Length: 289
Ligand code: UTP
Image (cartoon, rainbow, N blue to C red; front, side):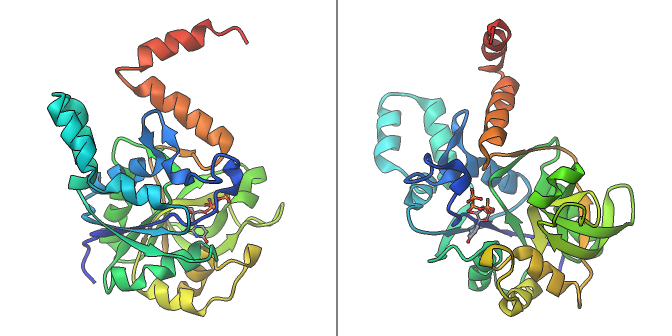
């Protein structure tokens, strides 16, 4: 196995129940953060990290994602005719920069099951998994940071962050031994532990570098928490035969699949924008709620 990571899998077949009713007909991955759909932030991060091939795992009602990454001939024609060069460039860049393939997950049987669906498209090479609801702002893209760790250890790596104990029940949590300032060797994993049962304060977030052996593990695991095949359980199975690392990434992560997280991401990303930030900041300062 070389240190190259060319492919990224984006599981996007979840039901998005935390964001109902908005997600009844609209995939949550297409909800806009300022002016880009959530999934585009993850795809841009992947491209900036050197990924050339993207596999999106979709389900029913997700065709807007496919349209978004496709060429829109009519739109491009119109923008060209109107001389709207900047918009034309932005629209073209979406379909130009990366190869996108799709695979369906016909039933939402869990994140692990969604990743397993990508097996044939990934083949025999290391690959990234990106959960697009986790939007990460970082000076070095989070995926690039993880790929660096993968290159050092040539073993799978999960991104982790410290969470307060009362939030541990929302995440896959790791028991780990520290290797260096930000790197840990994973000893065990627990999906959504009950209060007081988390093995540490390190929570797995939606960025992974995996090797094809994960597919064998996922094919073995039984449905766990929520009757779904959990990626955490697949990783736990993998741990029996393969070293696994956790990396405390540098950057800020927003859970844009959750209403409050989505609002925070919207406000902070808008404030960071050169074109919108100053006016929006002034507006927020003037609010007297
Ligand atoms: P979430 O835990 O956010 O679940 O999944 P969800 O169904 O999308 O949303 P809620 O919790 O009901 O609001 C984490 C990631 O795994 C994908 C989701 O699309 C999301 O990117 N996923 C989850 C699948 O692709 N298939 C599944 O069966 C479950």
